Length: 594
Ligand code: HEM
Image 1 (cartoon, protein in one colour):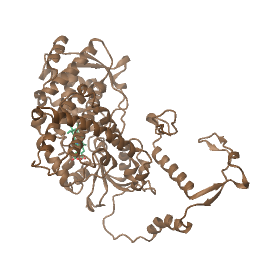
Image 2 (cartoon, rainbow, N blue to C red; image 1 turned 60 degrees about the horizontal axis):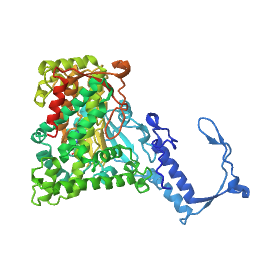
Image 3 (cartoon, rainbow, N blue to C red; image 1 turned 180 degrees about the vertical axis):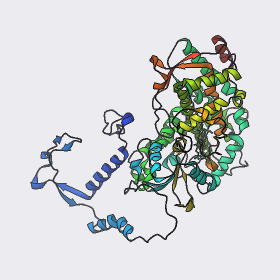
Image 4 (cartoon, protein in one colour; image 1 turned 120 degrees about the vertical axis):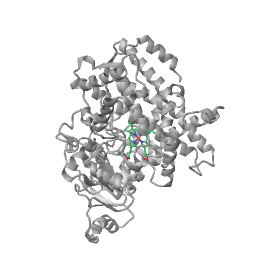
């Protein structure tokens, strides 16, 4: 008792399902079945060995084969031990089947979308595998762009074409603007007081309006330009040092540090290094991992009280830690005498909290502030960091494209200075590189699930109220009918002469979603992605370690709250600007702390 040993592949003294990339994809289902059947058999019966055999005499010999079975049969006599008469149990168990048998015949009318037949209890969960976006894309080839599934007890509809996405996110946007209530929203987002997991309604509308009018306006994002410049110069300086030392760097880690520092300063006004006592980053990362984990209780709600995966406990514990840290940050903010002069986003939220006559909320307390700040952290950090790392990996893997981008950067900016934010609109090829990255490596391959608020007919299919709507943007991005035959190739030139926008207008490219629940941080996300990709491509050439050929670089993804690379992106930077190293370093030092 008391030792926290897990069977999911984290603790290597107990790995019945294996671990790592090839870990058993049916782990959840296997665990559920084993626990359920063992609990039921032990709960309903006592078991006695035949012929008065003593329990300790029972042999435990195994036999080796595809699986390791007992070598002899396990024979025992059950004695029923519940206080409920066995007949009642039999009726209760057969009730769902009787209901199925005698249920009223459905009235003729539009049918549910086609889809694979679900199994009892788990529905189609077993078909998702460890990369659901790929498994669903394959199923859609058979069942079509609007496909029905049952995920545990939850009816789901999977959308896999631009036309279908437009029907759901534009024509019927208001009906599908809800989010399903999931445990992560309840336990990690202060009972859904943030934005991303919040149910569609008055509170969500006010939070969203407040964010669009005060926190995430283009002007507010632009006001942090100096901060971004200083942070990027500091990151470039560290890379210049690695370049001089011919050091292999973990590109994703460097990008991560840069994004984390920038977002920290924008949201709470201080850098991570000054926030050691807060240690927010670790808990945010844990929160993102828990939110992205497959949680059985979200799909089979009657299992929630048993917490079979212990996720509820982990989320509750994590929430306590997050809460403590945020309380510290808020206390410090409010204590500081020059509170009114703070320019960070938290200060705006706290000013709102302190003003009972604010234009948005009649009641807005610390929990609201914390939930919204968490959404901004999670929304801003992982998305940008993962997208930038994919873009740089794709450029390193395709030297032809990297060369074209560097030629554009050299001709528009030259090599005598670094890229500035005002340069970005003058870089059309960069724009295409970023679009192509979103198409092939979307950070949210299934966006965030939506939920239907009423029964509705879409494109001739009946969609039930409370269905989970999954938009498989990954499948749309890789559909040869939408893009062309070279759909798997990283080929930014496909966008030449095409007016395709990523902001939710063109449904073949919706990395930020579309409609009412589309990403409110799009402006900020696009800016930071373009700026960092441009800067890293402009300042350095990148070489793979140990003489690895670019085409050998793997582009394997993993699925969670976001879709990062499985393997680290390791590369050696070589500084290529004509500004002297020492100049960059000294300029950076003088800018630090902006
Ligand atoms: C490359 C950067 C980013 C990408 C690719 C991205 C992508 C997305 C996607 C796909 C959604 C779900 C849309 C839907 O359900 O239809 C979303 C929602 C959201 N994003 Fe972003 N995002 C990015 C940056 C940001 C930033 C910088 C913030 C910071 C403020 C942010 C905050 C949010 C929030 C709060 C939501 C929930 C909106 C709602 O439910 O009403 N995102 N994002």
